[in-house]
Image (cartoon, rainbow, N blue to C red; front, side, top):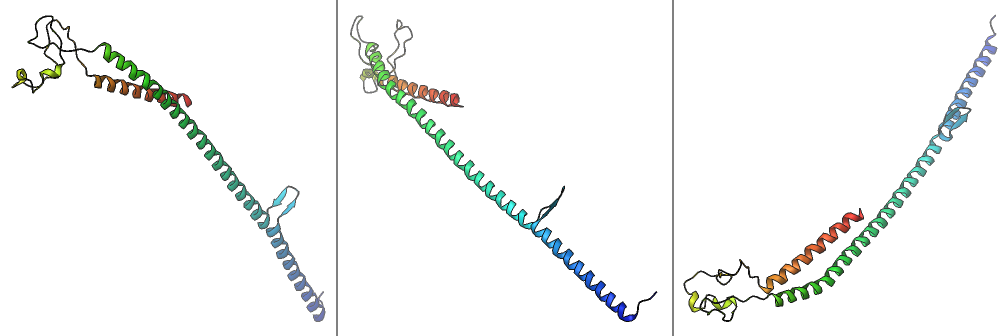
Length: 191
């Protein structure tokens, strides 16, 4: 059975129009799904717009989290710096308090243990004089190499004479070393 030519043309036009309309509807639906997304039961398609909005929100959330982490890090840094400054100040204050006491003790030690060297030409039981009296300018010292202390006497027991300035320097250096040690121990204890 064949259709008359006029009817065949009408059916062909309607079929072609229907096909074009179906293609247009499919393209519109596809674009709509791509742009807006679709969910039918367990099947879900995320559209470009929802995806762009979700990603923009995620980027805002990441930036906010970074800002919050930076603020927490700055606060922690400031807290640690304050703690270190307070620790250093406490150690310095302790060292300053101990310096006057230790220097007074060093001066008492110097006064109590002052030693004067006996000159070679001094009779037994004679007076003691400072070692500097036998320096390079002294008549007996001419032509001899310089000496830090007076010549040893057989009965001196191997004594070593230290100047008052050296006692004070040793006291000061000991205080500094103890302060540095206290600081290092306190830093270690903080961690």
